[in-house]
Length: 174
Image (tube, rainbow, N blue to C red; front, top):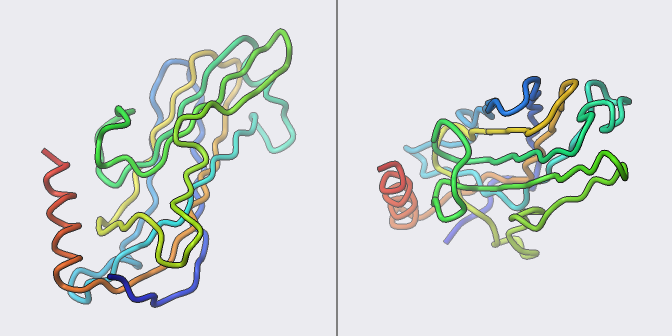
């Protein structure tokens, strides 16, 4: 199905959520990695989310100031906000639940961590030119920084496979 053109590499982007109950957005530009003419796609192997406070050394207790939930999603189509898990545009999703009284933070089992398999051929193929990141926190006293780490490689697809993925992506856009 896919022929690897590169070894695995990591793309990162940081999303800063600075207002409670307000969706925040960022993008990862894939224009240098995806090429329609050469049927070149990005193969996502895994996605990780790192939650940090206002700075790299600020505790989450100072950031949240109360019980809170932070949600983060990566999609390959711009949906304009958080989406349900049955949407085909969803690439990765995670939730951090923070209990201020106990100073306990846990990652819920949403799709996190998003690991698409252990083999070199496993992964989610993306043929769009951007990945879209959406985040939301229910309570904030400071800024919440979420670093998204996408482990990926560049692959060449057969004409049939590239067309099938492109059609699926277009159908998911409706």
